[in-house]
Image (tube, rainbow, N blue to C red; front, top):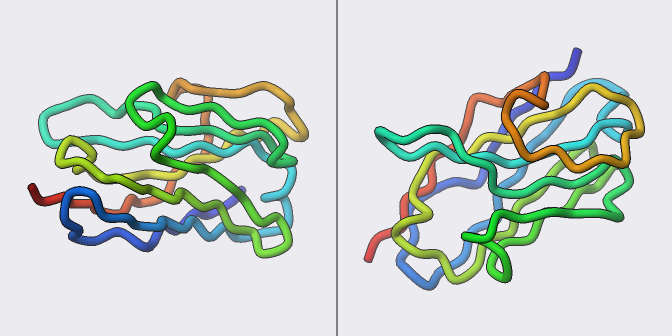
Length: 127
C-alpha cells in the first residue's frame, strides 16, 4: 500500500501560478499511474490530469489543458501539478491518486480507477 501526501496549495490571485506536490511512501510509486483530481464546494470530484508510470504519456481535462502540467520524478517518489494562469473557477481541494496496476500504459481519468488517495490540499484563486 502507498500513502500520498499533497502540499503546495494556497491562496493566489487570478492569473497567478502554484505548484502542487504529492509525496508517496514506499518503493512502488514508479510503477503506478497517477492522477490529479479536484473537488469544489457542492460539486462532485472531477478529473484534472493523469500520467502513466514512466511519465511519457499525459492527459488533461479540457478545462485545464494548456494551463496545467502534470509531471513526476520517480527517483523522488513525487508527483507534481504546475498550475499557471489560474482562474477563480480553479478553486477547489486538489487530490492526488494512484492506480495500483503495475506499469500500465493506460490513462485513467475516472475516480473509480484509482486505489489510493491523498488527503487533499486547498487551492483558492481570488478574482
